[in-house]
Length: 435
Image (cartoon, rainbow, N blue to C red; front, top):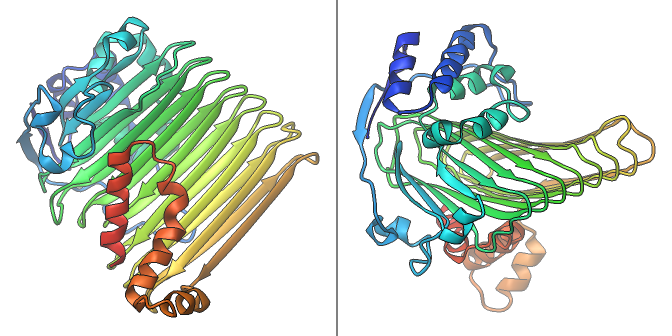
């Protein structure tokens, strides 16, 4: 597949691009409408980070043709290591902007499960995609970057689990990047209908040392009543990208959405992770780990909003910053009027490994109801000298002691990833970044 993008486009360029991607006609019109709104919309304003001079929208004109695979064994070695090659089912691979491999078990197909690239989904499952694509989750006109994703979208995946279907093995999506000129504008939709269950894990993997492209990633997750979804991710995008990530959850009655996010980019990153607990008895457990190094700047806004009664929102975020990097944690627990019996808890912990690094934890509770519980904890500091002393007194070197402390500090999220290959990748990335 050949994909062409450029930084200054006309509406005709957008329509030609849409035709090239072989998507449904309604998506072409959707793109054009989003494109028309770009100039009027403001940029997002993440708290404590000024992004008015960040470059999210200027990227090179480029055409690339990536391979299509017929088996996992054909993938590049570093990508193949993420998968159990004995089980090729429930896998989607995108190579740069090309849908390169998809495999879904015949049993799940027979039950109505859908796993396909976003372009095919707009054609073959049009009404389903229309129902969820930027309707109740992320809105096109939230700001310039959400409209930018809608207009320039060049990749992504659609996962749909019908009512009463339980998927035992994880569904894995790999977005593999090995061309420094390629930009990533992905849109991911994950839907679990009532009484269904799914673990979805995605990886952003790049083999280039520095990119000239941009990344704009939007994910929308919907859980029906009494559904269970675990959404795991390991993001490893290179220096040179300017990255915007928006992951949004809409959770139904007595339903649970668990996030386990390893945000390991080496580039400047703005990330929003917002979950709406719509139904009574809904639940969200949000775990995030971050490692910052070099001169990268990162801002992470994590928010759980309780609308339903007796809903429960738990936020746990751990970060390590070194060199001259900056990381900002904005944690928001919100309980709206009428959400009686709800609970909002958050904990942010940040380790600083350099005098020139900066970390800031910004916990916020917004409570509009009396009969609720809520709390927050935040800490920013260096490695505990008593822990270092204890380990070094056992004959462990200072460097090895610090490494062990950091791995233990980040372990709560690493342990939540359900695929051993992915867990190993995250562990290796953490190891590489903290040494």
